[in-house]
Image 1 (cartoon, rainbow, N blue to C red):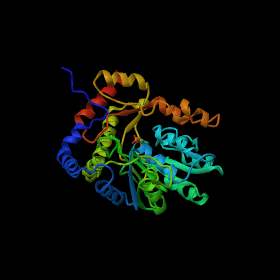
Image 2: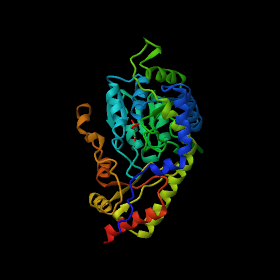
Image 3: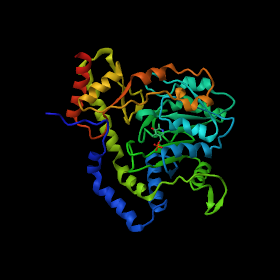
Image 4: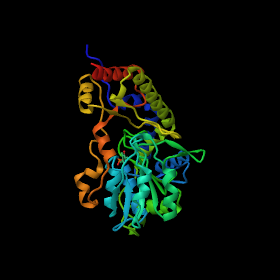
Length: 378
Ligand SMILES: *Cc1c(COP(=O)(O)O)cnc(C)c1O
């Protein structure tokens, strides 16, 4: 008998847990017939600001827009440079080109997969106006190692928190959440993220009242008053239905992140028992970090064959990411020749995201690990 498939991620089990709350939220909006911004969005913004311990949160249409709005509000443009990592989702860097600035890629730390903070500092030039620090796969990067240097030079720190809602890091002895440390924090509520909605959605956080005001302006076509435009902005609003869904889901995100951490712990135990030697390297939680495991990304020898082997056994997995951004054709004309990021390229050949979602069961994880073991040990 064919065993039940184990997807890389899945949302229906999660929906069953919170169905009633979500439907109540949707009903509330339908009864009000108020669909764009409004009270539902405002209350969600306040709830997120309070959860993240940051003064301001501004909803927008997606994580990609959150990044673009951030760079626009910071006034970036032609002649400016923005440093970021090449091992991330495309949007972390496309926003730089769309803002008119030039992307500068530095390599990653091979253990955390996050950008190498020493190389960030070395890449700074007089034209550097911002650094986009991506907290990849649910783990924050070493913000405290770069933030003071950036502040000193008047360079903005933009946190890309799309994969790390709820992650925190101990800084100067206190836990600090991602999105509360830079000039701006950018979040995505794409359905598969740790806090997802049922469509597209995003958010920008900031401690600066000036930036908050600017971002609120830019998300409505730069119109301070309807039909009177102070700036050329975007149409990038979070809609009320998504905000209502998110309001139903936000109170559970701590619990779901805890569940994800439990899944990661179980993988660690099971893989330790499987004794795979060098064949597979598990993700590392750096000291002081509270990883929320948006993804569980291992380094695997013979990655492509392993992925195929798992697929034949009904086990889903994903390659995040198959090509380093400094090698993407669309960026070539914007980069200095000779950018080298060997760690990022190596990881592109080895990385594999195993099934990871809060509802993944111990039995399913045992099957995943047994199949990986069968692949390597025959
Ligand atoms: C998902 C993601 C984004 C973009 O978010 P969207 O809501 O899909 O536009 C940006 N950066 C990273 C790191 C992401 O994972």
